[in-house]
Image (cartoon, rainbow, N blue to C red; front, side, top):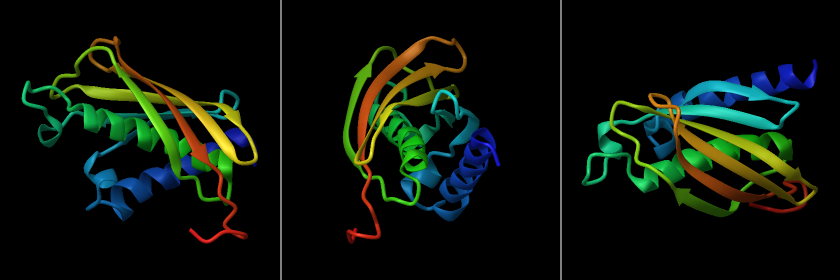
Length: 152
């Protein structure tokens, strides 16, 4: 099986885990949608419909919900890069650019820029599906924890 096929199968499994296996957790409540992936670019894209429960007082997607969307998408590529290892988030730095309205879909693309033995660095962009405009960016770092040597 080539790398792209492996990544697509991994992403299908991740989507099932998020939306079915974790339906009562924040991951399941986000209702993520598979947009695509690229093994060559080390990237994964997910869509997040902007739901009423995610709204801030201005009626836009709350910054915390945007942060969750970044973390879920970046974690997916971090876990793919980590293989069998556990990959917890070390840092997540978000820059908000423009609001996302209820009823829109936030499209998040996460790209691994460095995937080493212990650390995976990822950059992310989030755009409005309706307008195509950039809504936010993020830089994230994940640790690759060897589960054969360390207890989580």
